[in-house]
Image (cartoon, rainbow, N blue to C red; front, side):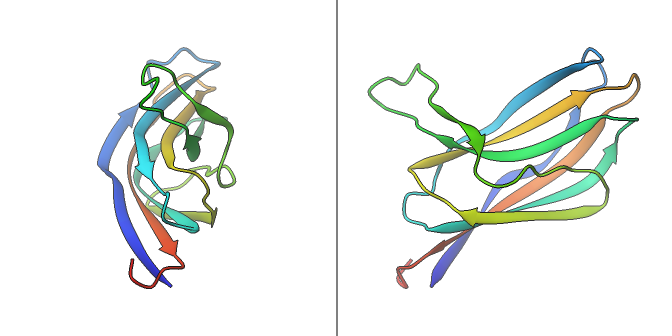
Length: 137
């Protein structure tokens, strides 16, 4: 089987410290990642730095993205993520999750639940490794 490594998130810093305590924020980081020629994948996330307090939660997930050129203003997204929740809870760290990928596109979403007052920040980067049954890919 052949495959490809796609750097989908270059090293980037996020700060959720000003998010209202007790609320969640969801950031779509990358849309329309083409997975149509692949059967399975692994999301590899590097946590370069991380500051969480108490019950703060930070997750990075892939969701099915049903983008349609016929209706580009509509947001078609699966309600559940492709792989189990990727809880980012230590730095430096490498977190990997994988499984079957189906569909045309996926999107990468960072979710933060700011449970406790104080600093909540992270510096992350990520790659998507995709595998195809076609040896020419």
